[in-house]
Length: 338
Image (cartoon, rainbow, N blue to C red; front, side, top):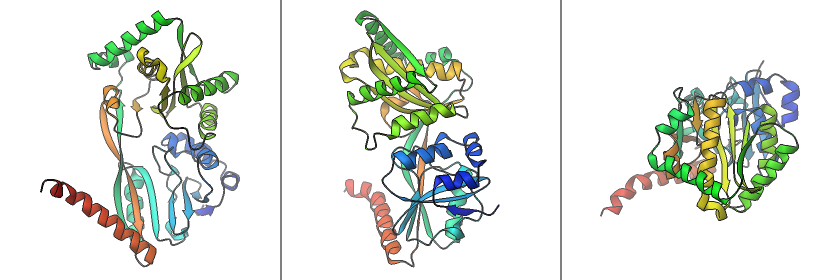
């Protein structure tokens, strides 16, 4: 089937009914049609979708004036096609001054393919750093073996936290996976903990609850809640799919920081991922925060692809700003030492 552009997800589902299941069986959670559809519905300001798709895959894009960009934002830890990348799609795209696709896996075949195709189409193409990504190569280990390989400071912190929780009262951890009333209560508990944490309020408050329901329907959700004396004090959302446990959202009540509730809950979630789900990788997703190194074993980078149409004035200006910024970053250490 020849690729074409669909302007909305219902039309895409009707025309290509197998694509939903196919996209859930390949690649990352963040490269599935359920993820993209929920993000578009609940995690974005109004945008115009350009869903380039054939029977084997879909590249979901958005259009905003002179710019085309991937259907991703701060909620997305990875971007790429749902399923395989559709064939012969660039001739379908309207010519725009700028195309921006991020964050991407530089080891994935679509990264090099899209860079090459955009260059062939006459765009001036570059890639850029998005963020560091820490992950754990499980290598077949049990949780006990894994924890034994961690620094003693982390192990002691977990044990001390459990002891303090025990002295403070009755505590328990429940990991929710299935849709229903208990999940709805867990979502409310997560939101309550999040509101008492150090984190800024969600810009799109409907996104996380609907994402949890979508992930539960797909079998991906692991929503852990640590309660002390009946009150939730820490909560985490992990998304497990294709042998990878993605640590997506975490929060703890700042009033309970003395119990190391976040670390205790992370250890329980890790144990579930390794011993029950038996994943081969745990991914801490977005960012280089130092605490992630305590739990993970490897680091890689996520990068973006940016392409400019220099025949358009807006594209030329954007390219000039991009390359000026790149040159300045290269020169800045030299200036700092003079």
